Amino acid sequence: MRVPETQLALLEAASATETKTVAQLAEELGEDPAAVTRAAFELEEAGLLAVEEHVAETVTLTEEGQRYRESGLPELRLQRAAVEADADESPVEMGRLIGTAGLDGPEVNIALSNFARKGYGKIDGGEVTLAAEPTYDPDADPEAEALDSIADDEDGVGYLDGSLLDRLESRELIERAETTVRSVTLTETGVTALMEGVEVAETVGAITPDLLTSGEWRDVEFAEYNVEADAETTYGGKEHILRQTANRVKDVLVGMGFQEMEGPHADADFWINDCLFMPQDHPARTHWDRFALDVPPMEDLPEDLVERVEDAHRNGVGPDGDGYHSPWDEDFARAVALRGHTTSLSMRYLSGHAVGELEPPQRYFSVEKVYRNDTLDPTHLLEFFQIEGWVMADDLSVRDLMGTFTEFYEQFGITDLEFKPHYNPYTEPSFELFGKHPETGELIEIGNSGIFREEVLTPLGVECDVMAWGLALERLLMLMYGFEDIRDVHGTLCDLDLLRNVEVVY
Ligand code: PHE
Image (cartoon, rainbow, N blue to C red):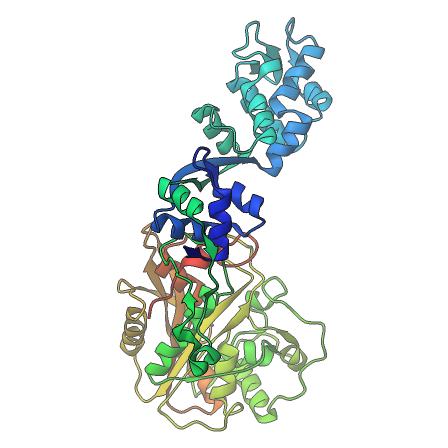
């Protein structure tokens, strides 16, 4: 009988009387466990080996568990300090004990709640009294002892009480994992085969052009693959779901007849705010909301446009126009900051500055980063992706805007949009868009929109209507996948399982 090399080695190492695990055998043979597992399955199929599987739990200490194992559980340190301070006789002030126990930061609360839970004593009015008869012997605290046994033997902790392990897990002192353990024994057929003599067969793992042209493929033996065997999970690089969704948004918008805009992340306030008829003393223009950059002011601004924008701010537009009666300063307009919205790109395109004069009808979009000096929370980031867009045509109405959003969001399975009247200095009318969170049912704001007012369009030289919007890509993602914290997809707190396993479906 002839079998591949790894299989022969495994046959010889396996025993008919003693069960050995694949991990043991792999170590004995100096082979990769995955290769030994594969060989074991092949030999099982040939009837030469018996393979048994069982699920084993491994338990390891977390970094915090490790720390407490060395320094003592916080509640035991408190208990010891209390004994030293004779708190069995009369109550002792808590602050003193915390000091002698060396408790610090979150450890203080951990110590207090577990001290009480374990019946070591009472905490009342800031004073600690030791119990005459504590539930546990502090020198044989079951949780402390369990930490020791886990540290000594990760696999051999099957005897530990399940509820004790649950408790340690909820305290985040241990981590539990399940693994499949396979063990093998030689079957009778295996023993007989070995006695009759088994030899190594050279097997070929893959067909090569050489094998084909030489005709050698006719004579060689091919390795068999077991496509059902468990394989180790490997995580390769993957496009982030945010990027995948951004690309999908672009495809959808291109499908709706839009063209993509491009432009600088750091731009003159002129394009970010002044063109949008945002008064220079608007609260959002102060340093609180804005990431100002310490770079020279932007020289390259179209002079005639700067004049017309200044005029709109000072005097308004049209016979009944009225300006802001607030200061307007060209240096302020030329100062450079990170854009707080991509409407700066819309201004560059509508003005003719980006790709030349545009004749209606036109549709443009961008899916790009914007930067805001917000406070980080579950729905706010300091930088996020905005889906900017606008349509230039004659006689546009709010109905056209609502229809565009309905059509756009439908492509992502979102059909329950709600609209709320809103105010923007640059659009009239304006409204905000809301969608329902699939898990919490909460209405979350997903965008802002409106029809540009003449104070914006006239200086830009646009004579027809322009409807426009800025939608948040991350909020769209929240509605699509149901996560509740934007930090699940961004930054150091992100949910790796979500990022690895979620698929963006077209
Ligand atoms: N710039 C707005 C924002 O960031 C979005 C918007 C763009 C609203 C264009 C109306 C018109 O919220």
